[in-house]
Length: 211
Length: 329
Ligand SMILES: Cc1cc2nc3c(=O)[nH]c(=O)nc-3n(C[C@H](O)[C@H](O)[C@H](O)COP(=O)(O)OP(=O)(O)OC[C@H]3O[C@@H](n4cnc5c(N)ncnc54)[C@H](O)[C@@H]3O)c2cc1C
Ligand code: SF4
Ligand code: FES
Ligand code: FES
Image (cartoon, rainbow over all chains, first blue to last red; front, side):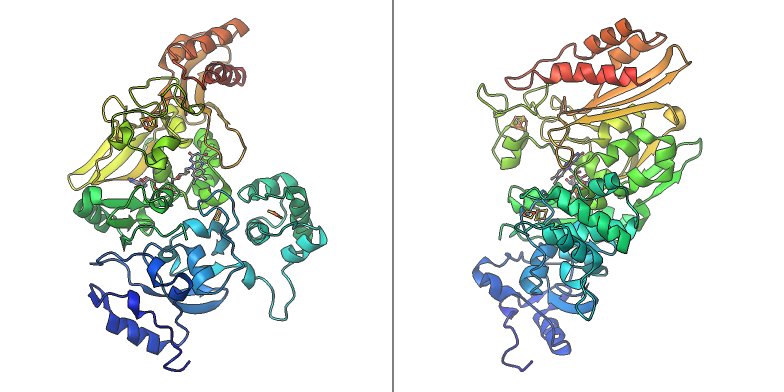
């Protein structure tokens, strides 16, 4: 990345704040050319307002997403769904309700499924995050859950699908041979407005035979 | 983006001292964050805008289940609801709590939501959550008790100006198990009976628990008293997932095979605090559970109920839940 096309994100940063400064931030940018900031997605006007920061977490963090380390500027009040979608460009993670009521934003933190819309990004600095983009293997082969969802005609509109996939993957990591009832319980935090629940369940049970 | 929460300073202490220090320093301008499943809605709606958010999830010593002297257990406040419901110790000996924790919200919420957060969460009265200036928010009216108000979810017992209900599924289970809350603040530690932990609106309408703004719930202690008793937990909600209880019953019984030796019955979502059915418990002591006895106990359970326009159905609901609990013995 050349000097000129580096994102001009420093507009958001106060001159100096306890723990870090604009100078540290710029140093961080230089040290890592993959630093991302998605301020342009919001426009400076609607970016999260910064308090007169006197302490607390440092904004520039390293996140481990889909096996890659990504440097990113994260506001204290930013959710993981926002960071993934609008800063890291991982738009496979959907935002449906943005209040823990639908499951479209489900991602894995470690091996466990969580709602990214309700997780502060700073909470997961030192954790492995997996989104739906991170499931296929290097040669493009789909994860068995993804393939099974296709084979069982899981998705209708598809909006809930990434979240359904992530919950199914979490289930099969914890319990590779679930009963249909266990699968139903494990998938109960993912709403499907199209009502394709049975198809997804068939998919989970098919995938369980393959993983 | 609606998650443009008002800005705050974020602190992530890693031990209890740091946490208590930060909480003491910010007092009512600070906000303790654990799983965040109550908190983030408030922030996103911009109804609450703390100056400092103190994310204590990294305080590892407050997480986990351990045995105590005397055969009870102590559960750290930061133990997630998934950990509570799957813990072999909790399941084996205090299944009532495991069952209750497993009924909360959805799997993803239980994966991050903590026992402490579940007990300290604010009420879900939607007038209040919407940000209106009702009594609980410091104003001088209750929107939910107005003649045309939507109050299907609200209280039938013990209202005092506020008719909101205790939303927690684990709270009635802990009341039934005679649990104690261990609370730490700058002034030291205090231990509060679960029954006394929840704040009556008549005493302080703006708070759900007796916690002071500079206090931290560190753990919950469950004595051996009710270990391995006969337990019954049932939550009635509109949907099996996500929804808060319309009423929930947590009950523990000891019998000699014929007669009830002792009983605990507590309800969630019918009063502003978990409601212990002391009169029913007393009535049951020493009695055999005949069909007439079951009916009499159920009738006693709803005594004193004062329904609002849209929640009269909670009266037979409470009665039927008591019947089902007694018939399971
Ligand atoms: C869609 C949805 C559905 C839900 N359904 C249910 C349900 O069916 N049953 C149910 O019981 N709950 C339900 N909940 C509530 C959810 O379970 C609770 O919000 C959650 O358990 C709270 O835990 P948390 O760790 O996420 O809390 P947080 O949001 O982090 O904290 C909740 C509150 O408690 C305070 N707090 C947290 N921990 C401590 C502590 N150790 N000491 C002092 N104060 C503390 C916080 O400051 C905050 O005010 C639901 C929530 C959502 C969003
Ligand atoms: S029930 Fe309580 S919280 Fe709801 S509007 Fe009335 S005073 Fe406010
Ligand atoms: S967008 Fe996160 S649960 Fe709906
Ligand atoms: S496929 Fe449309 S919401 Fe599930």
